[in-house]
Image (cartoon, rainbow over all chains, first blue to last red):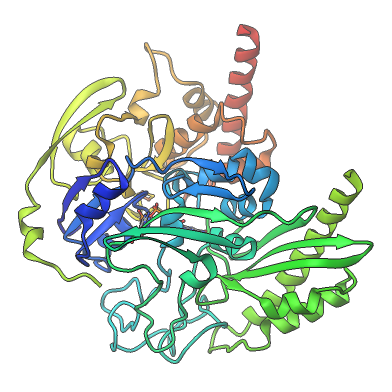
Length: 335
Length: 175
Ligand SMILES: Cc1cc2nc3c(=O)[nH]c(=O)nc-3n(C[C@H](O)[C@H](O)[C@H](O)COP(=O)(O)OP(=O)(O)OC[C@H]3O[C@@H](n4cnc5c(N)ncnc54)[C@H](O)[C@@H]3O)c2cc1C
Ligand code: FES
Ligand code: FES
């Protein structure tokens, strides 16, 4: 692995100062994305600022009912947190569907948001990749693109966003709190990741030197059911081919409110407003779920090896909605 | 993407790292880019911990840091300053095999043995972890971060379940 300098920081302002706006400096949290990519020579930091000692490892319920998650809370701790299990089961399920026990013990909340695509051409420093090396081309376009995205693609990049956690957050709704050389600001979760467009190297809205300090989840939907379904090549420790995260509130057999986000098929964590529109005020029935699935995937663009993802995602959506509705009905009966 | 820079050359300087490895304080001189796995194997000669993929994809390098199972190939040694590291060499205590080691022996839970240290470290971490349910599917899922190229999974699962039952029974007896 190439060499770099290393320092720690004890609080947020110290970390931001040590980082500066220097693009050769990188924050390191769990290290599970960063060190992997430094070993592959895809990331080339000259200096790391270790943020693990920052006081950002707490989960707290705010007065307005939202849940504020510190940037360095691990994926394991977040998945098993009682507030998350009770009020955001979709997030707990999605986290536990990701990676492995060891990786979840290391991976942090902000690091997960910042994880990079698993596109093999991005990960191979000798391949053409506009995301890694702007203007170099995209070997995935005519290469082995079975794992690649069908939604949100451009003619520059079709790399999939690999996160499970982010799919739950996209459905739940959240706000990121950022702190950088120019001070503090907030940004909506669904505005944070960018579509590749003609600048696939610009993956997110973080400005140079900015640190994610917290992610605050929107208040949970009262009485809703939730389900995260992840379909993959093996039963565990594998990225999604297609995943669907659904939250639905049902009253007298009618869907009062619905949230749907998709993973494994899109270039960013994909909230499907089209599907949500198709579900709203409709009967909680398979025919409705099928219409929603159709609406979610209508703009999908396949490449040579990944056309199968379109029907696969549709099935994932129908199943996730069916299970979420069942969960909602169970919740209704218990009340 | 970040450009390589001159500062990278200066950073090849070694730093001092203090770890508590299998209960013993150890001091290391390493450059910041040395991962815990290499520090354990090359500096401390604790070669029980194995390198499979070096990218978090196999679990052969699993050790405990402050009691938690992690992939030591994706953790810098410098990030572990002051932390307690347990490797497979630290599982046995006072000449007594750890329940997981005994169970792996009894169930023949390996063929070539290369994945075994990592498997046992994951198993040891989950033995008393109440967040993981008792059924086979839950244990298999919790152990999925450890690949076995020989496919000894069936016996590994049995060994883990046996060790877990044994430890649970022991805890009940004591309380
Ligand atoms: C083999 C393998 C399998 C995996 N499988 C899955 C899976 O199935 N599903 C899934 O969702 N994920 C999976 N992952 C990805 C894993 O979830 C991410 O690597 C992890 O969440 C990253 O978090 P981290 O804390 O380790 O980040 P780091 O590696 O420390 O950092 C990642 C990036 O984020 C930046 N960063 C970190 N913290 C901050 C902050 N607070 N503010 C600003 N920038 C920050 C870093 O500079 C770096 O660029 C897998 C990873 C591996 C290696
Ligand atoms: S060597 Fe660390 S996970 Fe394979
Ligand atoms: S026993 Fe050979 S790899 Fe598991």
